[in-house]
Image 1 (tube, rainbow, N blue to C red):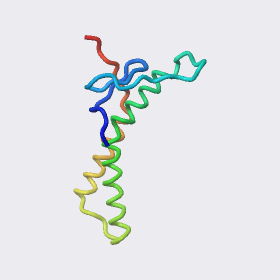
Image 2 (image 1 turned 30 degrees about the horizontal axis):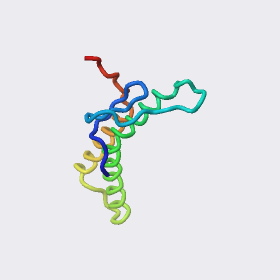
Image 3 (image 1 turned 45 degrees about the vertical axis):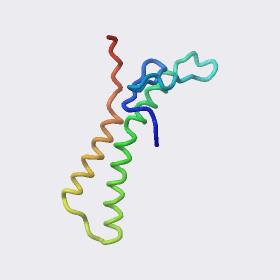
Image 4 (image 1 turned 90 degrees about the vertical axis):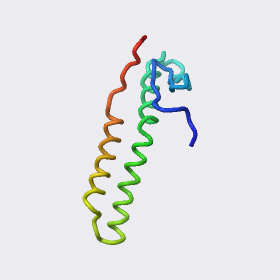
Length: 103
């Protein structure tokens, strides 16, 4: 999947990549923009976390498939690698977005 370079950032209702502005979020009529910033931040977190979440899911899926088909657990290194990938993905999703610094 091709998309703008990560990481993305949000600035009010705008979503930017290192390559430039890629989107502006809009709210529904009558919301006076109260959700625009939250929507932009949610999109940024989801997109910036996507690769790590996918990798962690693939590792966990492989471990569970191995266990289900063989009845054997994998080596400790595989468990540690999977746990580290899951921890990284969770941290990416749970870390608050840092406001861009005006330079």
